[in-house]
Length: 84
Image (tube, rainbow, N blue to C red):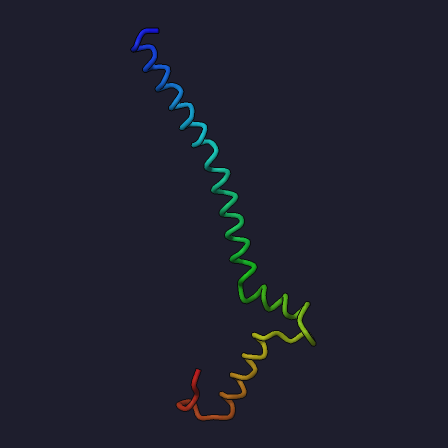
């Protein structure tokens, strides 16, 4: 085989490999994006509040308990002595 032909075949093989990798990357990036967004939504305060409400003890979440404690503290003390 002529050296020039061999170089062209090598370039074609490498470019085919790179293009197949390039075609494979967008679906994987989409999959990772979907997983990341799902985890972000699952860890949000709203979803955790729903989970605590429906699956927690007595239907009261830790977030609701903390908010209730802060409200009681605000109502019982002057504003300048509240420590958050």
